Amino acid sequence: MKRIAKTISTLVLVIGLFAGVLLVQSVVSFRGKAAGQPANLTVDVSKTYNDALNSWQFLSQGGEEKGNSLHAVVPFVQKLHPQYIRVDHVFDFFSVVSSTNGENLTLNWTNLDAYLADIRAVGAKPFIALSYTPHEFNQKDTDMPNPALWNKLVKATIEHISGKNGLGIADVYYEVWNEPDLFGAYKTYPPKDYRDLYVATSNAALSATNVLPFKLGGPATTSLYQNWFDALVALQKDRSVKFDFFSWHEYGEDTGVLEQNIAKTILWKAQSGLPNLELFVTENGIDAANNPAYDDTLAAYHTLSSVARSADKINGLMSFEIKDGPGPTQKWGRWGLLTHEKFGAPLIKPRFSALEFLNQMASGARLAVSGGGTYVSAFARQTNGVSRIMVVNYDPEAKHVEAVPMTFTGISATKFLFVRQDFLGNTTKILVVPTNGTWNTVQYFKANSASIFEIIPQ
Image (tube, rainbow, N blue to C red; front, side, top):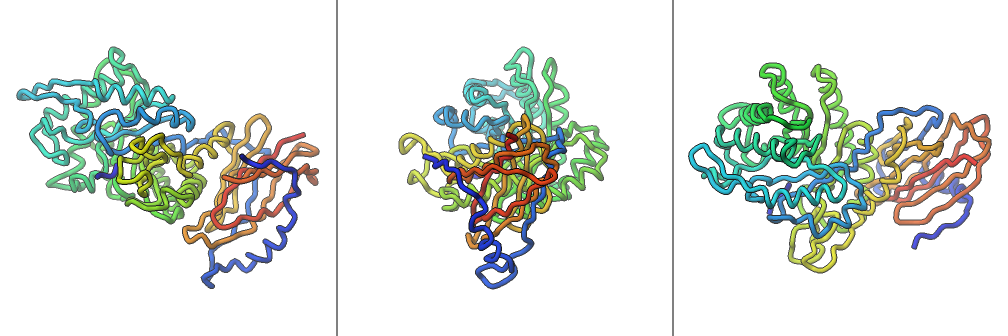
């Protein structure tokens, strides 16, 4: 949350690629300095793994406006087949608390239920950021909430959404606050200690009765901080809090930072003694501020690169956000995948198309890919004997080009159709006869481009 017609033709793909190899063989950028490690991709199509995680099928919407802001874009979001949709500002934007009388609460679920109904209408489940402090508590929205009132509110919320006598939604995720290091300036030590908020929330969650399975976690900080991770692990061990997932937010042009941060959290998880701890980036984008890239293709290639670098490593990578807020113009550099209906029918932005493109990779088992580079990254799947690899060349400066060697091994078919489908581009095909189950090719990628390659046995 932040405030405030394809052409299909049959062509031989390798024609002209050797010129591309020469073009980038020296691996030097247009700026005249080293452009990093080139890619040299290898995929063994004979070995599949059943741990595929479609992390891109998680979306996040911020507090742009009160009420059921999702309703106008339900038909669009259905096309993305999300597994979960995150919503924050649950307590201060949906008027859940009508009034307080001492430690008694009067609750009204009408507005929130309408929003949750639309989440379910698109085929997703809710991912609830338990935020912020209701004004009815006679506190500011970023204040540490009154413990007694907060306990009753959280317990009632979980019993309403996850309860067998409530909405009856199983496997809901509840996230403790949103960006606590920013909204409320919480720390992991006194006087305004996030640990106190987490313990109070966990106690309330654990006291919920007659509920279906649900998960609790956090802290949804603005970036990745090891001291916040360590603090929650210590709470789980010392205070037996419910801690099912760890989350943070990741913004910035360099998707390599995302990859490095994921590697850090995987290491911390291995050291924590919590092997079942799930990992989520609950907001992701090219910039935490408004940026014209969100209305253009650069944000789309950022998303494709982010997914390629995180695929099968974390449980969810949530694109922020689904829909723009009602800004001064239809396109105003806002974070949305779609424009706001204030200016007519919502427009699909390139980042929305990127998620549609990725859904071709959503089924099947994981294939291991090695040999990614500084600019080029990839991940692969196999379903019903068809192998697919998504490859993206992403450069924020839109200068880096690369001819990427690709080696496919373990091919059992005597011949196969090799298909290259370019994002926002053409589809090309060739018939290939592998040698001893192996085939090598070199594929050219212009600056900011992506393709899905298929090996279809014939």
